[in-house]
Length: 356
Image (cartoon, rainbow, N blue to C red; front, side):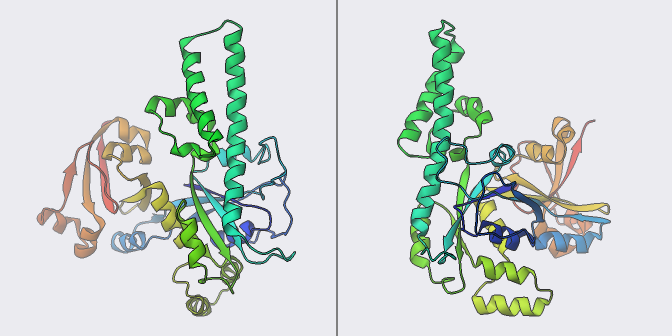
């Protein structure tokens, strides 16, 4: 999973990035659209992996990973749709979800916060970026047709991009547009920004944290929203004394780390779940979309497992936690053989049988 942190200048994106990744990237009050993004991978904390490792005592334990990418502040002065530097464009296009970091504190220049307005500004910038891309593509299509190269494929493209144009002109993100599977396949390569899933990180200072329920309620009408005390939580990451960290978190009313809270929301937004593979060599968590079949899930491990899929030997994490023995699971009839169309459940433990 790749999460892109975007926001207006001085929103505290890099502060949030540091809090999420335990990094020490430079925090600055100024933004430059040519600056390279900060990137870091963090493991997805999952107590199920810990408990499975305790049972199987593997040589290696592998958690799921999330890649965090901290993009520079969006400049509202860019009128050509180029919101990101050339090297950042592939990164933003390959993100799974965009997290808007929204300032909920008075900045160093004395500007008061306006979270709802800031979200609207970011959405408008993303809409404009997509609009320019769609208009450019339509111009090329129409130019080709005018030159007499009028093919069925080109007319289909023209129809789809006119759909996209109308949607964007109505100031509505493309992900809300009802497209057929064929239409989705045709435009997939363009990776339009407003086709991506979006969520909001409300970045509050210590005075505002936990006191912005009305703002969060309004924001949640359109986007999943989570509140962080960015600067406070970044400073917590720099403390080595775990007892002190727990005490400070409790004082602020923070129950989990920033990373765990964002991970939970991200999995929910994207419809992701986890299954596990276990053994003496390795216990590992795998991330899949909810509703994935056993054969599709096998392909997450390796494409050969999907191509040669025979069956999945399967049981649930809770079952092995209760018995701590696969032998007992088999005796109790909780060890199952599932076919390729079985819908994998969150917490399933699977071993794939396949033909080479």
